[in-house]
Image (cartoon, rainbow, N blue to C red):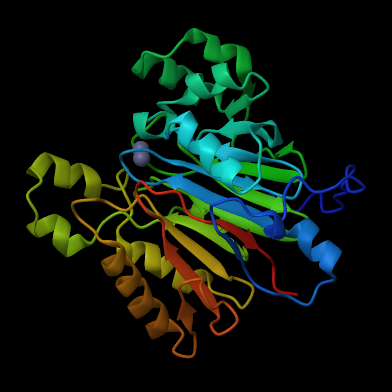
Length: 325
Ligand SMILES: [Zn+2]
Ligand SMILES: [Zn+2]
């Protein structure tokens, strides 16, 4: 299965003014990432806009887009937070075309119907098993079905100028998906809630420019913490969550000079801290690549790789992610 089938993307609306630009900021800051040598126009066209509205067991939702349109990944954060955060950086909800669901746990689907009801142009993209699991597990309106577009693992589909390939991740939800996202020549891989790095995860994280990857818990904190044994066992299982070290080993393994941004997601509130996750990643990545410098996104010109632990509740700035030439 290749994810590189359609690389001649065009921008049919490119003659129109941008929906937003870094110069037209609202209250929320925009972080302009890698300043690459592409022409200004193609750099702006290919850049991926990324924003997280919340990440972790309390609720997950993020935005991926380009200058024209985009989509949400998961719907575990209240619609008003999503809407207001996007509006603050000049992105209207009409530019959001759909919601991709990774799996049917409540922290990923809780607000899907209210988002659809308030923004009726939205479509929800998930596998039929995720849809059925969501309706079975949660008291959601069956009208969600009216907005459903069925997607299937290993089969790419498009939203705007994005080509997306869902892939299998191992977790204890229904039909759990990661996503490989391609925009022109720029690629991003997303895997939240996965108990292990399976062959498909390994495959789809190869060669990407940007990652959003779970870094759920510090093993020591989990084992010595106050969780009951059954819960510790569930988290540690291959179908549970990814610990900092396993997450870091994947990043270290996949490092190449074109990988510029890694967003660590779904950090545990009780068994992790952003500092601990970043520290473990830095140690393991530097052990494998001693020359590699890691930054926090604030001075991206000075370091090779930017690594950001996504906050559990607060929305992030809008990151404008450009591929290195
Ligand atoms: Zn989750
Ligand atoms: Zn889950």
